[in-house]
Length: 140
Image 1 (spheres, rainbow, N blue to C red):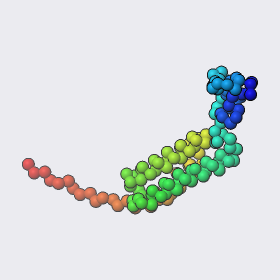
Image 2: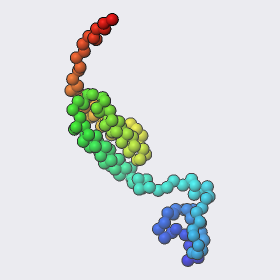
Image 3: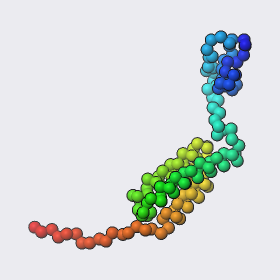
Image 4: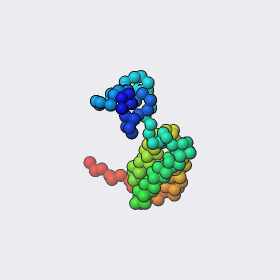
């Protein structure tokens, strides 16, 4: 249909997204400053604030469950070399999800989970301390 906006049939659109042209030929993308400054709509940007918080909580709980599933196999929870990777993965997951949802880090939910981690995993260290002895004598 002449004069119709190309892309109106379900492609990416929005005001100024496609140039107006006849129905023949490929669509031309507008390079006007207004188009370049538009933020792209994402699924997350369409959610209300309440839904964002609920969705964020759902994703953060996935981080928490994944962390806990890894910690089940760790024998000495207070040995940093054994848990540092899992702890770092949890922190990365919490930060990454906060960024995805446009939330700051740390945020109240992430702080609560990190505190919970410390209360559970570091409250009663099961690390067996090595027994130190005198160094061997050197004979000359």
